[in-house]
Image: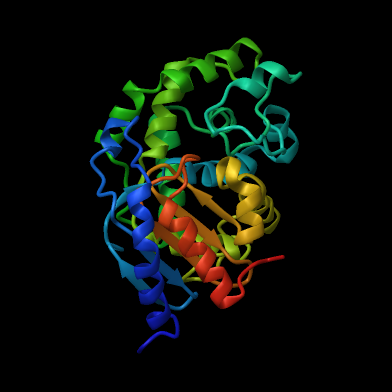
Length: 309
């Protein structure tokens, strides 16, 4: 069956491919530097089938900061809102995702939101489990359940590369430990954090995860609740206000779709009550978002009137 998106998306992919030349892959993590800068891919899931996949949609890539959305949901399910938001705030920063500035200037010294690195580290420290292996298994199982793909795992090479180059994240973690935002061993936390970021998916997996978030946390195939409705709402709100790093305000105006990006080039989109979107484009802009992916989402939003505003 020919999908209603098919011809439009082929045209859109061709339109946005030219932007990849002005982006840059995330070479500060050596294992991500091998990505093909010109790749662009998209998948849309409507709840019954993957309606259309275009571009290099079967290529695997790591979640990176997209995992922040999922660990936030898990932490809220583990502990509830009050406890989680004692450790991390709810405000956009306006700063780069890896900045330490607001930790130094705000009292108490807790991260302003869960979508920046400091906030994600604080949230990751809250995931229940007797060991890093148990915690990681919980996160991987969660991603498998949301995507309906039981083959999802993490990329050991990417995790190792990130762990070995995580000096800035270690600095953030040690600062928060000094101010009692986190407890425990910093390298143990970094080991878990880098492995959760290295969970591998493709565009279709992301589109199904986006669909589940868009539909109150329900499983995309079997229509049972994976994430409680209120937690799914909270997560989507953070995606709108903080999901595209310090480009979130402009993105809300130009696109208006709850979305979260990662420095591997992935973007997950969740149109409330509508479709889930998965995008891959490893060429990044200066703020760490997929440069072609951002343009593609803008075209999708305009073409199909997807903005929530």
